[in-house]
Image (spheres, rainbow over the protein chains, first blue to last red):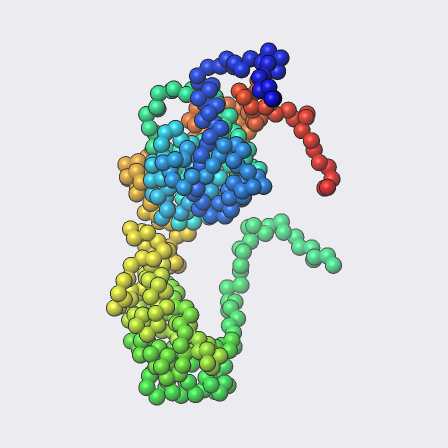
Length: 169
Length: 266
């Protein structure tokens, strides 16, 4: 019979780690960033590529969820038109706290090349943005980098901070 | 071969285009008699309708008619002349020139392998009759014409905006509509989501997408000097690494010197 006993003193230390609750909670949050399945234009293709097997978002704990109630991070992937702006805001409002927003690509950042009457000139006009991701369209590696930056930012925050009074934008 | 050298020193000051009497070249207009099938069609139409002008351009028959006849002409062309397919319908804006819209119907006859275009002009305040009952494809095309150009259509069963939101102000494809929108358009999303009193908080649209502003920490305007939203701007370049310097709890530390760089393709 095989012996399944592990000698902890010899095999790499005791199964004990000392940390703060803050760090533990934020570590958990940062490594289960569920993103909203929400593509607006061609950046959504890059977002899908990031989610698929070659770039594999799952290893960061980023899983696309088809409901804003289950999502923590909203990736604005594409051109936001003025007609659609209210729906984006509604989806953002439906997400549970804590929530973060990545503005992906030139169109979402500033309106990009669509300097016209029908395009919102930057999503930060309607929702607060945590990470701006430049590019047209950004490569999947760039989106991964943005997610890792967001994870880093989340790790810095306190887990039990009082919910800040809502600024709309 | 090298391109001819031109002195472009004062190019910006010169008017971009200075031939005031230049006339745009137009495509040749042929008589309908040039084509056998078109000649027959034209003759048949001429018996019962007033055709203001008829010619062949780019191998297509163009007919200019009175706007009151539009439905009957299309009905005749569909049933008698076998133009069974309305591929496009729209209007163009000639308000500045003559106070009119030009409406065109692009038709296709599959059996004859010919295309024909029916044109008519209406005044800005008058309306055109819907051809939805003749061609089903006119349904959305007429709504689009109403939405973007602002041509009123009579007897359409569901005449409302199709592309712009229902509460949009103005008709964007008119020549007089500004590209970056009128006031209602520029504040549209703010007014709709937050209300008009929130305009002061958000401020006007920033139309220069290449803007770099060191002092602005509330918009996409800073490079290499990131600070959190609304905080004091700093001139110190921020180092953006994947991980904190002392590593991350439970996660292997990323060491650049250990990473493998592939110089050639495998």
